Image (tube, rainbow, N blue to C red):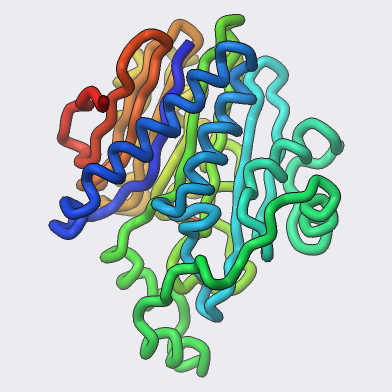
Length: 311
Ligand code: GLY
């Protein structure tokens, strides 16, 4: 029984040291919530609970900590995949509610659809009683001048990418292996700073932001436009099917991501049905944690850092 989580990737900024303890604690708590769920539940339950924790803690770019679009609105994306039957549920551009991953689960289990956006997503959110988002908890927008000029049509989002690159990414995600040997994967995000309304990234797209079958599960974080071009999570899992070991599989997928879209574009967590795992990124930081039954959780911030045990 094992759960891996990620909480974002991007450039290293010294200010992150001020929040190091909190970040490591929240990452490891999410992984522990996942492993505790595995005592009675399956890998899908564990992924949903770990991600719900990260959406609700407000520390990451998902749920209560989500970034806002160029108009200052909250638009959340999430995706979830159950490996044994390759079933998928995903939601794009959810407005007005915090926990997009729970909505993705409803779509996976209760509908014949895979990806729902707009009014349909709101109908489901009402039906399952998702917690309503309160504007007071949203983060302040950066770069008011850029926002103003973009809103006036002076330049488009292409320019905003440069700024976004400096801010980093902090989409959350999880993969889990349960005692039956089943795998699941998921991800949740507010998207990217200053995104256009209606923009969807990799997080609700199967094979890009998340993927699971009965051999491998993967979840990605980073620039959605780059991750979608590389089909990052499917690529990493396919590498295992082609015979690469799990470290090589993750590294090769990140190499392709870099070749297509350049450095500082993303990271991935990968777990196979035998409990082997790996993390890889072309960014300076990859927030990540792992928890196994009966062991202390471990977490790390910089991509080059080793995981350290968290009390
Ligand atoms: N990875 C999150 C996004 O690009 O939307």
